[in-house]
Image (spheres, rainbow, N blue to C red):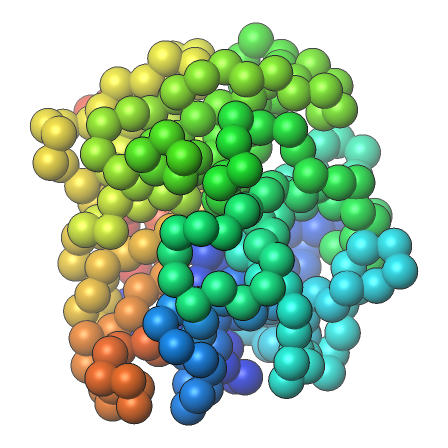
Length: 303
């Protein structure tokens, strides 16, 4: 499959989350990594200092850039001008859901533009919106530590809301919090342990609940009957998307339902093309495949 979407500003879209509004318009929210900036700073500065990019589509195939979510007096607002050259905060990995009344976003936020991974607090911050363009800030969630990123949220079979996230203070496993009202959250401990991973996403398909996590070598898959207790699909080394289009690996994605189809959008960094001046492949693109269940196993059809 060819690339579905490339960011026209920095050429580094990652962590895509696609939703469809009541009018049938597709919206993509993603981390806008500064992949093509010649001097973004030392170390991993280019992965920080990011805004949330936004793209839209009438059919899920042809996408147009809409701008970035920029800080406003009440929270965030879509600005078609895109990101300013200088920022003082990092935004990552937007999780966007509809709670039956309005949209909610759970956004990873980091102060400043760190040039290394350790030593910097991370929080998951809640926003709400009526139109996906203007977002009112509610505030950070009280979770297991101050090193939390990559939220995923869903209403589970027991009627309660759950939020899964990576806890870097707990060896980068997936933890979970539970809520009855999307206001107060209680810690439920570790959902997925084992080898470090990130970017959980959770959904129902084929009479099962599924969780996909990014293991940086492809994606691990877990199955559950209740979205509480999880069993790994295949052996401990089994993954999907360990060979993405144009080379590289499938990384951090999320699902969206359209009719009878469940599409999975993810990003990959192609192994072909010109490397960045720093000598590494920084460019990324968004791809998609159709999720299906065959013989009680989750598969992804790359179309």
